[in-house]
Image (tube, rainbow, N blue to C red):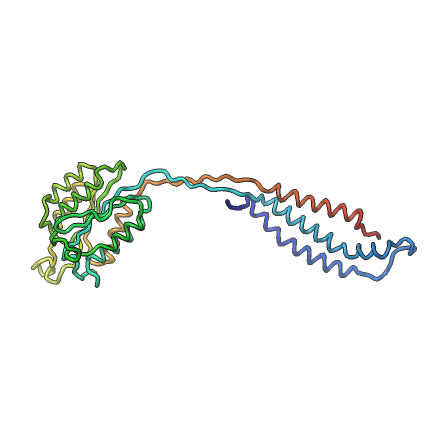
Length: 327
């Protein structure tokens, strides 16, 4: 529950209250006079009543100022309300396929190797996909499910952080792009959302596995899955002399996989470029989520105005009866 004002601009008048209090105090001091205007001392009230009336002035002033404060707040229309947020629509189901072959340990993308640069970029990408179910597949000579599609992104990020190169976890080395793609597609085959994508990252050429990449891409296309492919690795100097690329990367196959499924192929040669690629994919694949906020307000002006009016009436009544100041 929250408190708000329907006409907050009225509250600008509140500073007038302390100004009036100060003006009343100054004015009262200037009017003090020792003279007595009674034609006869018999007309004077009793000493006790005179003393009470002498000290009643500040009380009456305080009552009037309190009443004025409450009436200003009432005119600003205080409200209490409850807001409820409802999200409608659907996200994108995403499968991330990550190469963990030995070559991903090459340190051309940073001291942690290509694998660490990829894990960092994936972490940033996952953090931006609040409404999407995301799963993770890793592949070397074979492919393995690292995390099923989930909205628990904290768990997914933890499992991403635990990824190691194939040989470090006792998996046979190699690069089975086809198996990685097929496993990722299988993860999404039962998805009922309209948008399904695979983001596959590798630094090599398919050299293992029972499924070739193009066959796996054909299956992904049939399932309505769009595939974005990313090739990572920095070319060596020999690539500029026409003697080689410096990395064993099958860019033609990666381009064909992306084109067949309606995706795109990207090339990353540094960590910043890799991060930009995931940012671009993030922009290309927006979740269709609409947020509706429903608010219910209860007017509280009456609860403030009634005490304010009561104080004002009480102050006027006392001023004209018990605490009336005679001339």
